[in-house]
Length: 246
Image 1 (cartoon, rainbow, N blue to C red):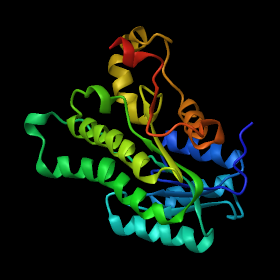
Image 2 (cartoon, helix red, strand yellow):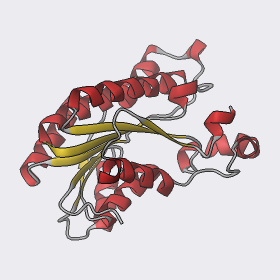
Image 3 (cartoon, rainbow, N blue to C red):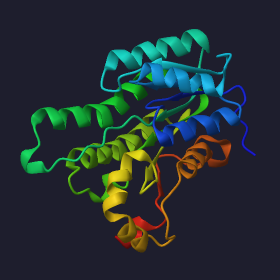
Image 4 (spheres, one colour):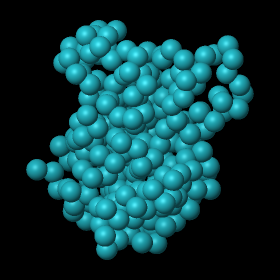
């Protein structure tokens, strides 16, 4: 049983399905959770479902693409908890668009959320980390192999992977940094893809099913825990084997 009592988590993009599973897992393990999202009302409501008294879970607004928002959240964490133990960057933007008719604005928006946001948040968090802290950046299988109609998403997630390795070098030995790369996880975000290609994707997946948000959350919790105390600069695939067969 992992124990995160007296630990503090900062989780971005906390209103998504995978992120909610991460928040719930860390909260159940005893952590205090600072949950951020562009949807301030939604993330505040979610935080209250975890902790109605607001002592161990708080929801704050953070536009991942804005450096100032990351700084503001870091200041709020410093004021309320005085430290940070875990950072999980899970904010993401995933939209269909072919390269040949992608606009400059579409490219910039996606990379601003998916890559710039990771940099802004990690940079703001560094002064807060307690000894033995951990970062887990949520990347994607797309960052390793590309993704049809999602070049901006895939390119930015690839950047997250290399950024994470550099972060691990720079933060060691005080703080570890790793990434997770989910594959097809059964969430509303990928439902259009599942509607079109669900049977083919299951047939290509050795474990013959889609992943569950909780399975990603448990992997993130492991990477933040002392059980992973000698793991840094690595990426864990959570895709049921789809990556090795495609």
